[in-house]
Image (cartoon, rainbow, N blue to C red):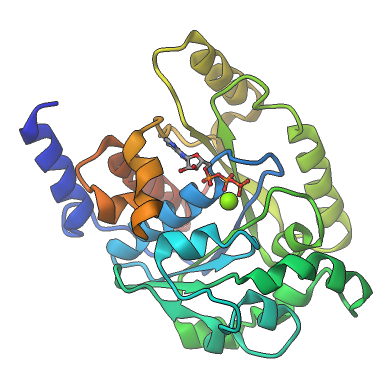
Length: 288
Ligand code: ATP
Ligand code: MG
Protein backbone atom coordinates (compact mmCIF):
# COMPACT_ATOMS: atom_id res chain seq x y z
CA UNK A 1 0.00 0.00 0.00
CA UNK A 2 1.51 3.37 -0.95
CA UNK A 3 2.36 5.40 2.16
CA UNK A 4 1.09 8.64 0.61
CA UNK A 5 -2.39 7.17 0.16
CA UNK A 6 -2.46 6.03 3.76
CA UNK A 7 -1.25 9.40 5.06
CA UNK A 8 -3.91 11.17 3.05
CA UNK A 9 -6.60 8.98 4.60
CA UNK A 10 -5.23 9.57 8.10
CA UNK A 11 -5.31 13.32 7.50
CA UNK A 12 -8.96 13.10 6.45
CA UNK A 13 -9.91 11.03 9.46
CA UNK A 14 -7.98 13.12 11.98
CA UNK A 15 -8.56 16.65 10.72
CA UNK A 16 -12.12 17.85 10.96
CA UNK A 17 -11.50 20.83 8.68
CA UNK A 18 -10.96 18.33 5.87
CA UNK A 19 -14.71 17.94 5.49
CA UNK A 20 -16.72 18.94 8.52
CA UNK A 21 -19.76 16.84 9.43
CA UNK A 22 -23.02 18.78 9.33
CA UNK A 23 -25.05 18.86 12.53
CA UNK A 24 -28.53 17.38 12.12
CA UNK A 25 -31.57 19.66 11.94
CA UNK A 26 -32.99 17.75 14.89
CA UNK A 27 -31.41 15.40 17.40
CA UNK A 28 -31.33 11.88 15.94
CA UNK A 29 -31.77 8.72 17.99
CA UNK A 30 -30.63 5.71 15.97
CA UNK A 31 -30.98 2.10 17.08
CA UNK A 32 -28.47 -0.30 15.58
CA UNK A 33 -30.23 -3.65 15.41
CA UNK A 34 -30.01 -7.07 13.83
CA UNK A 35 -30.79 -10.15 15.90
CA UNK A 36 -28.16 -12.05 13.96
CA UNK A 37 -24.94 -12.21 15.95
CA UNK A 38 -21.61 -10.87 14.75
CA UNK A 39 -22.83 -8.81 11.79
CA UNK A 40 -21.03 -5.62 12.83
CA UNK A 41 -23.61 -3.87 15.05
CA UNK A 42 -21.13 -2.85 17.73
CA UNK A 43 -18.30 -2.11 15.32
CA UNK A 44 -20.59 0.10 13.26
CA UNK A 45 -22.07 1.82 16.32
CA UNK A 46 -18.75 2.81 17.85
CA UNK A 47 -17.01 3.75 14.62
CA UNK A 48 -19.85 5.81 13.19
CA UNK A 49 -20.20 7.53 16.55
CA UNK A 50 -16.45 8.18 16.76
CA UNK A 51 -16.35 9.55 13.22
CA UNK A 52 -19.14 12.02 13.99
CA UNK A 53 -17.58 12.97 17.31
CA UNK A 54 -14.11 13.49 15.85
CA UNK A 55 -15.67 15.81 13.32
CA UNK A 56 -17.33 18.04 15.84
CA UNK A 57 -20.76 16.44 16.31
CA UNK A 58 -21.46 15.50 19.93
CA UNK A 59 -22.55 11.88 20.09
CA UNK A 60 -23.77 9.49 22.77
CA UNK A 61 -23.50 5.71 22.51
CA UNK A 62 -25.80 3.61 24.67
CA UNK A 63 -24.47 0.12 25.14
CA UNK A 64 -27.56 -2.04 25.48
CA UNK A 65 -25.78 -5.38 25.18
CA UNK A 66 -24.75 -7.28 28.34
CA UNK A 67 -21.60 -8.32 26.45
CA UNK A 68 -20.46 -4.70 26.90
CA UNK A 69 -18.51 -4.69 23.63
CA UNK A 70 -19.29 -1.06 22.80
CA UNK A 71 -18.12 -0.01 26.28
CA UNK A 72 -14.87 -1.91 25.70
CA UNK A 73 -14.29 -0.35 22.28
CA UNK A 74 -14.90 3.17 23.59
CA UNK A 75 -12.86 2.30 26.68
CA UNK A 76 -15.26 3.45 29.38
CA UNK A 77 -15.42 1.88 32.81
CA UNK A 78 -17.94 -0.97 32.83
CA UNK A 79 -17.09 -2.99 35.89
CA UNK A 80 -20.03 -4.25 37.88
CA UNK A 81 -21.31 -1.45 40.09
CA UNK A 82 -20.53 1.35 37.62
CA UNK A 83 -23.64 3.46 36.94
CA UNK A 84 -24.76 1.90 33.68
CA UNK A 85 -27.65 1.26 31.36
CA UNK A 86 -28.95 -1.30 33.84
CA UNK A 87 -29.42 1.30 36.61
CA UNK A 88 -30.92 3.55 33.95
CA UNK A 89 -33.53 0.94 33.02
CA UNK A 90 -34.51 0.28 36.62
CA UNK A 91 -34.72 4.01 37.27
CA UNK A 92 -31.87 4.29 39.75
CA UNK A 93 -29.79 6.81 37.84
CA UNK A 94 -30.38 9.38 35.13
CA UNK A 95 -28.71 9.31 31.76
CA UNK A 96 -26.70 12.37 32.75
CA UNK A 97 -25.28 10.41 35.69
CA UNK A 98 -24.58 7.28 33.65
CA UNK A 99 -22.96 8.86 30.57
CA UNK A 100 -19.16 8.78 30.65
CA UNK A 101 -16.89 10.76 28.33
CA UNK A 102 -14.54 8.76 26.12
CA UNK A 103 -10.92 9.31 27.04
CA UNK A 104 -9.78 9.08 23.41
CA UNK A 105 -12.25 11.12 21.46
CA UNK A 106 -13.72 14.52 22.28
CA UNK A 107 -17.48 14.86 21.89
CA UNK A 108 -18.04 11.15 22.45
CA UNK A 109 -20.03 9.86 25.44
CA UNK A 110 -21.04 6.34 26.38
CA UNK A 111 -23.55 4.85 28.77
CA UNK A 112 -21.81 1.56 29.53
CA UNK A 113 -23.27 -1.91 29.93
CA UNK A 114 -22.10 -3.96 32.89
CA UNK A 115 -22.66 -7.63 33.55
CA UNK A 116 -25.70 -6.59 35.64
CA UNK A 117 -27.55 -6.11 32.37
CA UNK A 118 -27.46 -9.86 31.77
CA UNK A 119 -30.46 -10.40 34.05
CA UNK A 120 -32.39 -7.38 32.79
CA UNK A 121 -34.12 -9.18 29.94
CA UNK A 122 -35.91 -11.32 32.54
CA UNK A 123 -36.28 -8.65 35.23
CA UNK A 124 -37.95 -6.33 32.76
CA UNK A 125 -40.75 -8.80 32.11
CA UNK A 126 -42.48 -8.05 35.39
CA UNK A 127 -41.80 -4.30 35.38
CA UNK A 128 -44.27 -1.57 34.62
CA UNK A 129 -44.04 -0.11 31.10
CA UNK A 130 -41.38 -2.67 30.37
CA UNK A 131 -41.09 -1.75 26.68
CA UNK A 132 -40.53 1.96 27.24
CA UNK A 133 -38.20 2.19 30.19
CA UNK A 134 -35.27 3.35 28.10
CA UNK A 135 -37.43 5.90 26.32
CA UNK A 136 -38.53 7.30 29.66
CA UNK A 137 -34.89 7.74 30.63
CA UNK A 138 -34.01 9.46 27.34
CA UNK A 139 -35.87 12.66 28.11
CA UNK A 140 -35.40 15.73 25.97
CA UNK A 141 -34.21 17.64 29.01
CA UNK A 142 -31.51 15.08 29.82
CA UNK A 143 -30.31 14.87 26.22
CA UNK A 144 -30.30 18.65 25.99
CA UNK A 145 -28.25 18.77 29.18
CA UNK A 146 -25.75 16.37 27.63
CA UNK A 147 -25.96 18.54 24.52
CA UNK A 148 -25.78 15.58 22.11
CA UNK A 149 -26.85 15.66 18.46
CA UNK A 150 -26.74 11.91 17.96
CA UNK A 151 -27.65 8.94 20.12
CA UNK A 152 -26.70 5.48 18.88
CA UNK A 153 -28.09 2.46 20.71
CA UNK A 154 -26.14 -0.77 20.28
CA UNK A 155 -28.48 -3.77 20.59
CA UNK A 156 -27.76 -7.34 21.66
CA UNK A 157 -28.21 -10.13 19.09
CA UNK A 158 -31.81 -10.89 20.02
CA UNK A 159 -35.28 -9.51 19.57
CA UNK A 160 -36.05 -9.52 23.28
CA UNK A 161 -37.12 -6.70 25.56
CA UNK A 162 -33.79 -4.88 25.42
CA UNK A 163 -34.03 -4.53 21.65
CA UNK A 164 -37.71 -3.58 21.95
CA UNK A 165 -36.71 -0.84 24.41
CA UNK A 166 -34.18 0.43 21.88
CA UNK A 167 -36.75 0.42 19.06
CA UNK A 168 -39.28 2.27 21.20
CA UNK A 169 -36.69 4.93 22.11
CA UNK A 170 -35.48 5.71 18.59
CA UNK A 171 -36.62 7.60 15.51
CA UNK A 172 -34.52 5.49 13.20
CA UNK A 173 -33.18 1.97 12.84
CA UNK A 174 -29.82 1.27 11.27
CA UNK A 175 -29.43 -2.36 10.21
CA UNK A 176 -25.92 -3.62 9.54
CA UNK A 177 -25.87 -6.51 7.09
CA UNK A 178 -22.85 -8.71 6.62
CA UNK A 179 -21.95 -9.40 3.00
CA UNK A 180 -22.17 -13.16 3.47
CA UNK A 181 -24.39 -16.05 2.62
CA UNK A 182 -27.37 -16.24 5.05
CA UNK A 183 -27.04 -12.50 5.56
CA UNK A 184 -30.67 -11.93 4.68
CA UNK A 185 -31.95 -14.81 6.71
CA UNK A 186 -33.82 -13.59 9.74
CA UNK A 187 -34.15 -10.11 8.31
CA UNK A 188 -37.85 -10.68 7.71
CA UNK A 189 -38.34 -11.41 11.37
CA UNK A 190 -36.48 -8.23 12.34
CA UNK A 191 -38.57 -6.16 9.93
CA UNK A 192 -41.84 -7.58 11.19
CA UNK A 193 -40.79 -6.83 14.77
CA UNK A 194 -40.02 -3.27 13.73
CA UNK A 195 -43.48 -3.06 12.12
CA UNK A 196 -45.11 -4.26 15.32
CA UNK A 197 -43.28 -1.59 17.30
CA UNK A 198 -44.31 1.03 14.72
CA UNK A 199 -47.92 -0.02 14.97
CA UNK A 200 -48.25 -0.26 18.73
CA UNK A 201 -45.46 1.59 20.48
CA UNK A 202 -43.59 4.07 18.31
CA UNK A 203 -45.21 5.52 15.21
CA UNK A 204 -42.23 7.68 14.35
CA UNK A 205 -39.84 4.75 13.89
CA UNK A 206 -38.43 4.03 10.44
CA UNK A 207 -35.67 1.90 8.95
CA UNK A 208 -33.58 4.80 7.72
CA UNK A 209 -30.25 3.16 7.06
CA UNK A 210 -28.76 -0.13 5.95
CA UNK A 211 -25.02 -0.55 6.14
CA UNK A 212 -23.25 -3.38 4.34
CA UNK A 213 -20.31 -4.63 6.37
CA UNK A 214 -17.37 -7.02 6.15
CA UNK A 215 -17.30 -6.89 2.37
CA UNK A 216 -14.69 -9.16 0.88
CA UNK A 217 -13.99 -8.11 -2.69
CA UNK A 218 -12.36 -11.45 -3.48
CA UNK A 219 -15.65 -13.30 -3.35
CA UNK A 220 -18.41 -13.20 -5.92
CA UNK A 221 -20.85 -13.88 -3.16
CA UNK A 222 -20.18 -10.50 -1.52
CA UNK A 223 -21.25 -8.75 -4.72
CA UNK A 224 -24.34 -10.91 -5.03
CA UNK A 225 -25.42 -10.11 -1.48
CA UNK A 226 -24.70 -6.41 -2.03
CA UNK A 227 -26.83 -6.37 -5.16
CA UNK A 228 -29.64 -8.28 -3.53
CA UNK A 229 -29.75 -5.90 -0.56
CA UNK A 230 -29.71 -2.87 -2.86
CA UNK A 231 -32.50 -4.28 -5.02
CA UNK A 232 -34.57 -4.97 -1.98
CA UNK A 233 -33.99 -1.83 0.07
CA UNK A 234 -32.99 0.79 -2.53
CA UNK A 235 -32.09 4.25 -1.29
CA UNK A 236 -31.94 3.26 2.35
CA UNK A 237 -28.68 1.38 1.72
CA UNK A 238 -25.60 3.56 2.26
CA UNK A 239 -23.35 3.86 -0.80
CA UNK A 240 -20.32 3.26 1.40
CA UNK A 241 -19.64 -0.40 2.05
CA UNK A 242 -17.40 -1.39 4.95
CA UNK A 243 -14.63 -3.73 3.80
CA UNK A 244 -13.46 -6.70 5.81
CA UNK A 245 -10.28 -5.46 7.42
CA UNK A 246 -8.02 -6.85 10.09
CA UNK A 247 -7.48 -3.38 11.59
CA UNK A 248 -11.19 -3.05 12.26
CA UNK A 249 -11.22 -6.28 14.23
CA UNK A 250 -7.99 -5.50 16.10
CA UNK A 251 -8.98 -2.04 17.35
CA UNK A 252 -11.31 -3.08 20.22
CA UNK A 253 -8.52 -5.20 21.70
CA UNK A 254 -6.70 -1.91 22.33
CA UNK A 255 -9.80 -0.21 23.75
CA UNK A 256 -10.01 1.92 20.63
CA UNK A 257 -12.19 2.57 17.64
CA UNK A 258 -10.49 1.92 14.31
CA UNK A 259 -10.49 5.67 13.70
CA UNK A 260 -8.24 6.16 16.70
CA UNK A 261 -6.32 2.90 16.29
CA UNK A 262 -5.34 3.26 12.66
CA UNK A 263 -6.74 6.39 11.05
CA UNK A 264 -4.89 5.66 7.81
CA UNK A 265 -6.58 2.29 7.29
CA UNK A 266 -9.27 1.59 4.74
CA UNK A 267 -11.57 0.52 7.55
CA UNK A 268 -11.28 3.90 9.28
CA UNK A 269 -11.81 5.75 6.01
CA UNK A 270 -14.89 3.74 5.13
CA UNK A 271 -16.49 4.38 8.52
CA UNK A 272 -15.74 8.08 8.08
CA UNK A 273 -17.41 8.03 4.65
CA UNK A 274 -20.40 6.12 6.01
CA UNK A 275 -20.74 8.59 8.90
CA UNK A 276 -20.70 11.50 6.48
CA UNK A 277 -23.53 9.90 4.48
CA UNK A 278 -25.50 9.40 7.68
CA UNK A 279 -24.86 13.01 8.70
CA UNK A 280 -25.86 14.42 5.33
CA UNK A 281 -29.14 12.56 5.45
CA UNK A 282 -29.87 14.25 8.76
CA UNK A 283 -29.87 17.74 7.33
CA UNK A 284 -33.30 19.10 6.52
CA UNK A 285 -34.12 19.17 2.85
CA UNK A 286 -31.55 16.49 2.12
CA UNK A 287 -33.44 13.68 3.80
CA UNK A 288 -34.44 10.84 1.46
P1 ATP B 1 -22.98 -9.36 18.49
O1 ATP B 1 -24.19 -9.81 17.80
O2 ATP B 1 -22.24 -10.42 19.21
O3 ATP B 1 -23.22 -8.15 19.35
P2 ATP B 1 -22.11 -7.56 16.47
O4 ATP B 1 -23.21 -7.64 15.48
O5 ATP B 1 -22.09 -6.40 17.38
O6 ATP B 1 -21.99 -8.90 17.31
P3 ATP B 1 -19.35 -6.99 15.97
O7 ATP B 1 -18.99 -7.34 17.37
O8 ATP B 1 -19.33 -5.58 15.59
O9 ATP B 1 -20.76 -7.61 15.62
O10 ATP B 1 -18.46 -7.78 14.94
C1 ATP B 1 -18.31 -9.19 15.04
C2 ATP B 1 -16.84 -9.55 14.86
O11 ATP B 1 -16.41 -9.20 13.55
C3 ATP B 1 -15.93 -8.83 15.82
O12 ATP B 1 -14.87 -9.67 16.18
C4 ATP B 1 -15.41 -7.65 15.00
O13 ATP B 1 -14.17 -7.20 15.43
C5 ATP B 1 -15.36 -8.26 13.62
N1 ATP B 1 -15.58 -7.26 12.57
C6 ATP B 1 -16.59 -6.37 12.48
N2 ATP B 1 -16.49 -5.61 11.37
C7 ATP B 1 -15.37 -6.03 10.73
C8 ATP B 1 -14.72 -5.66 9.51
N3 ATP B 1 -15.19 -4.68 8.73
N4 ATP B 1 -13.60 -6.33 9.17
C9 ATP B 1 -13.11 -7.33 9.94
N5 ATP B 1 -13.67 -7.73 11.09
C10 ATP B 1 -14.79 -7.11 11.48
MG1 MG C 1 -22.38 -6.34 19.45
